[in-house]
Image (cartoon, rainbow, N blue to C red; front, side):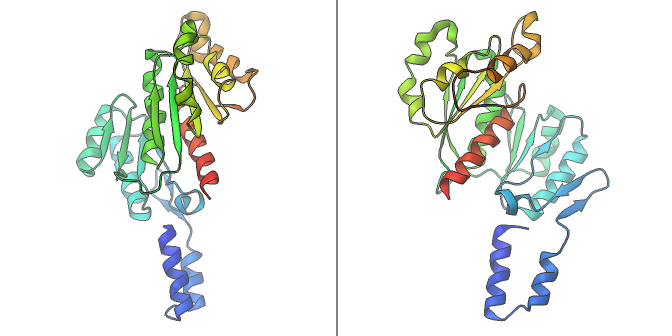
Length: 253
């Protein structure tokens, strides 16, 4: 159920055009649509402000399109499909001509918000290296699609610490900083010691053998000595963005 539908229902009750019993019956509808292969949460936008996202990896193209169709019928917010294979992206673009496929991020945004009248706030997405860009773009596109103003700062890893120091003024203006790094995963600690804003650390699976597909970066970030650094899972740019967006929504109230 969309937030505006609830407002219309309450207005109708106030004006006497809808009875209390009818309104209660509508509100008591189970906010889940059972598609047989998926149970779609059609109530999430009302609870959280964002529609349910679709994790496309492991699903067929037809399944992803069916879920997206159900979500667009019950939500006014943009719908995101993450980790989208090329074949599924093609099917989504055929079903939703206005959708946008962000290939590097492996993400499709259905019903993209072109003009956000009141942005939730500013998010800086920072990458340690160019190899981290795919995960960083997943974070940046997600945050931008769902209402944040996003700035991108690329290739400022700690091997050349002067690079991040050169952009510290830009980082200090952000409301939330998302730091994406692989290998030693040290960049979030450095940035966490520079800025006052919350820092969301996203470890990536970038690195040689002892990086253990991102485990080394994850452990470094979890053991950060900088206060106020939150850590999400390996390669989870979407999760990092959603954490930032939740913080911004609370701040905007």
